[in-house]
Amino acid sequence: MADVFETTGALRARPWFGHTFGIAGALFALWLRFQIGDGLVDCPFITFFPFVVLTAFLGGTGPGVLCAILSGLASWYFFVPPYNSFALEWQSGFIAMAFYSALGSTAGTGISNATSDRFTGPTEASRRRGVAADQSSDPPLVVSDTPGGSG
Image (cartoon, rainbow, N blue to C red):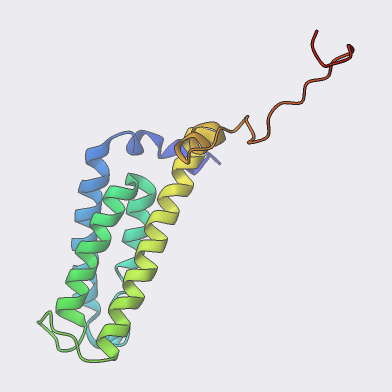
């Protein structure tokens, strides 16, 4: 079986694909959620999470965040009481949106960072974090045979 990272590498190399997939995924998840109807009244975000994660995997952080924001706004407006409004009922609405925000951002950025590290390798990933992979903060140890250490 081919490695999923290598198989999807060509898609990941095209920035426009991630954004397009994120927008299409959010719209498809919204359509799917409407088709399911009242079967998921207590789960307003359930159809959106897979597309946020998949978009972050295929497109990276930017498209993943775009999909998460679009999905969150659509869920909030249509499926979080009071319906068809951006108002929130105290406690239940605020808890639902906080849960979605925390889980969506963690999943989206986590998946994106994991796939980014997979493709750039540990040296590039470490460089982006500001740490050289082959250097430590300790000065090098110098060994000398002459008294006084020079020589």
